[in-house]
Image 1 (cartoon, each protein chain N blue to C red):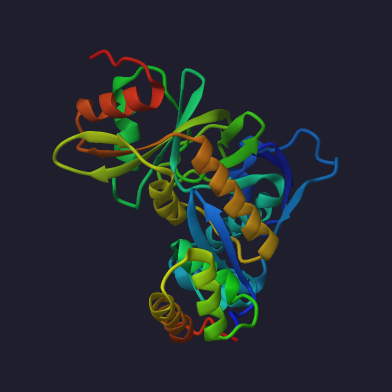
Image 2: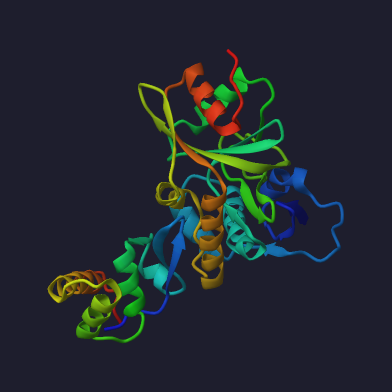
Length: 237
Length: 87
């Protein structure tokens, strides 16, 4: 079937039904027009993923491999996968990043609790597109274990790296600090032209997007700090 | 001495970053960060050159004392060899 994901027409060649249901919100109305990308999985990729993720169904394994296939092809279209959670607030997108277990889900949950209108674009694996007016973050069917996400997009206006701490603090990161942290959260293709495109996209992302380090607990004060730094707005308790 | 083909060096967020591609990416994982002189030497050894030539080039580029340049180049060459980055 053909899907519209991150502004691209993608034909997904799945064998297992799992992915049909998984991607159904993204089904393209026009199934017969040309596609930008064909996502498919080889037997050896399936086998390798089974080794890495035992105890999962073949449909699930295939589904993970299909997203990797898609994401390894998107750099040619000025797009890349970034492992993060993206919230949209009053028309602007903000990405929250951190190693697994540093509290991305917790912190974004706090935004939803204390701020009335944020929308979760994607809780885990959004696609970013470079445009003339900066980067856009797109929701995708792949949205992490919580399943948080929307078939929507927002201009990416800030990055917020999270670390757990007893006392809340926030500071702006320099481009070189962001560079070190960001590489852990992107998918680097092995294929040369895709790798070059990814490096160039990453550089532009770093140079164009303000980034902060939030050291935080799980209090409302943590939300105030990230909200004020990212949006430039005043937080009202 | 020459660095294997299949590494890409790019400036990302002001940092010199090297990543392996193609066949090399199966052999090497992750990425390498280089400082300014490291990046200079990486580019220099991307073509076939001797250690002596690298010392000359480093002296010319950065106006450092020969002894210091020799130590830097030798240290860099050791890292390249230890990590099997050399053809």
